[in-house]
Length: 168
Image (cartoon, rainbow, N blue to C red; front, side, top):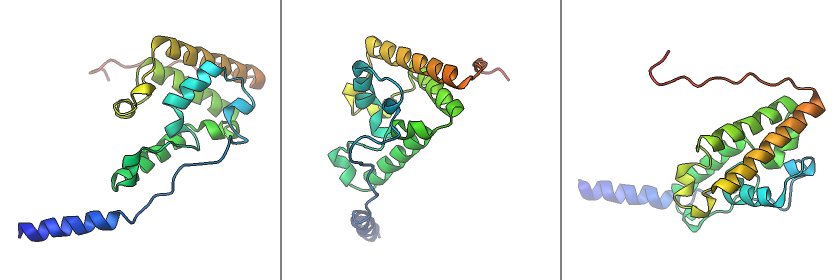
């Protein structure tokens, strides 16, 4: 019985190797890339490339192990989720209020250590941001938010206070 189960699992594993998700690879910089309207200093561009773009752009650098399924399927789902939250290659398609909010989320998540994800930095050690890189990214995001707010007469969003654990 165990032999039949193992053979069945092997068959499923081999079958999965024929399923290939569409890869997130584009040629060149998108016309809607954030840098086509907002200044992105080279040091910030370097941070975005090493820590953000694999999941938040139209161009992912895929490691070898994504050729093995179901890892490749899981990875592509993760990339699609990241692009759905924020895509620097499509940033100029966002309404000003949404663009402003997305940069505010970048600031919050980097400050809280939620981005880049731990699951990403376990394998991509170069994506771990040092304090200078975090400061550069945060300062740039803040300045860009202010520029968006000024250009579009956006009123500042009230900051939501985080609830302590155990409080309603």
